[in-house]
Amino acid sequence: MAEDEPRNGAPGMQSGPYQGPRAADVTPEPDHSDDPGYITRTRFLSNAAFAGTGVLAAAIMVPVVGFAVTNPLKRENYRWVDIGPASDYLKNPPPYVNPTPSTKIGEVASLAVAGPSSDADRRIYVVYGLKDPSTRPQPSPDESSEAFDKKFAAWASALRAKDFDLLAIWNRCAHLGCPVAYSPGSAGYVCPCHGGAYNSRGLVTGGPPPRPLDRVDIKIVDQTKMYEPQDIEAGKDRIPLEVAATSNNPNLRVLVGKPYSIDQEQQPFPLHDPGMPVSGTLSHLYPFT
Ligand code: FES
Image (tube, rainbow, N blue to C red; front, side, top):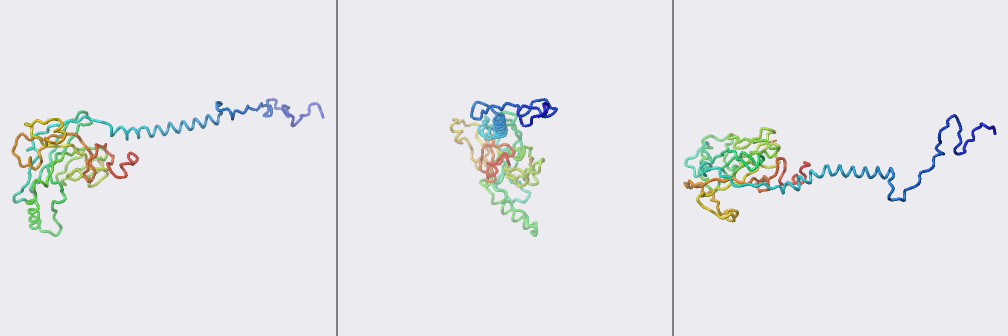
């Protein structure tokens, strides 16, 4: 063999003009696979990916869980607020003599009520009206006005105080919180933001709201009478509506208190934020719905 002829196959030997190190020259890395304390690049990347996934999951779940857990625990101190004499709200009570379709059946009043925080400031509608507004007769297309007037008079004449109740309805739309307005023409509430519609009791009749309008505790008391806190808690200070509606006592006052949410069956629930359903499957999936 010539002196300058390359010796192919021999480790560490040059076989061309390249004079640098060859793969065969590299000393193999020691094998640390059995050493639990040694971090290989693969193990480091796996751990980093695992940790990143955990951080991402926490970033998503912590606000959701915090919202779900702390919201029901959030306590706000509400106190009863005197909003005036009962006679200001219990207007047009039954019985009705010679009623016509234009006879006022109860009344809806609107007023602003300040709460202990700006979030608690609210406008409420105080509704003295029918427990079941759907009983009110509506004219049918082929019905004469005389026939309808007669039907209406018979229905209205039969109304009694027991057919009425007193509600305080919060004007915060149950969809995204826009202020709803009472529409006397439709005897209901309409939301200017996305067309949410509610009947006179705040129950949803159309649009996107997931639940009815929230309500506020309301009661009628005699301001000349004193009660122990536990008796007030038990409701012993409350004057029955049927009594108050026919009373001339100037000391009867209307008080409003704590807000709460309801479902379409008017069952009470703790106060929910706008957008939150209070019952049904969607209430369990919120806020993913
Ligand atoms: S906020 Fe009222 S319908 Fe959307």
